[in-house]
Amino acid sequence: MEAKERLMADYPYMPFWTDAYLGDTSHLKTIEHGAYMLLLIACWRTKDCTLPNDDNLLARYAGLGDKQWQRIKPIILKFFEVDENTISQRRLTKERVAVEQRSNQARKAANAKWLKTKETGDASASSGQCSGDAIHNHIHNHTHKENNNKGKWIFEGKTIRLNQRDYDDWKKAYSAIPDLRAELTSLDDYYTSEKVDKWFPRASAALAKKNAQYLAGKKTPAHKMTDAEYNRLHSDLVTANPMGGAQ
Image (cartoon, rainbow, N blue to C red; front, side, top):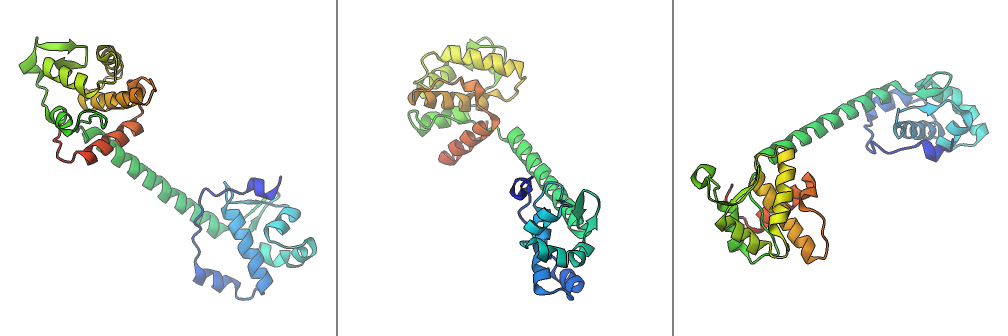
């Protein structure tokens, strides 16, 4: 196996404790320091934080010729745990475990924050290509009280329900969509199957994307928009219309 094929960079930052290193290596010559450091770095960059116990490869990782490696090998390998197939450095492996744990904790925290934002972020979004902020803010601020509008829906699906005013506003805002009712039916089927609760902001953002796609000559179904695309579009629209109220 080629050395470059084995090396990776999943964790490009390697902790380095200078006091501990100098305390353990004060007896090394410069060439030995260099070889040891290069082996530590090469070891860190592998997936399992080990190197193959192969003199040819270890010499290459250390930047040495075969004879040079054989001459300093007994000194250098005293710092490593060596078995038949691999070499590893105990402190380095310990640091790798700590880095992986911190990385996992940070990823979990970021995911939790994203989910919290996703669940509570129910501000509506409208099209940046529509007839201006007035339409957006009306849709954004409208309070859809179903109990007060029962029996008055101009569009009534299993999940999506719009009165005449809202339907007309969306028809005007997303005028590039040739068949708004068909798109609403598609969204309603999707939101019903996915048990989407706060459908209004998602539908608004989805239709805004669909409207933009028609304007650009693309016709990808709006309900296929990913959560990342929805959040990005929602963020852009809220930034563009900071006075918009929460749904």
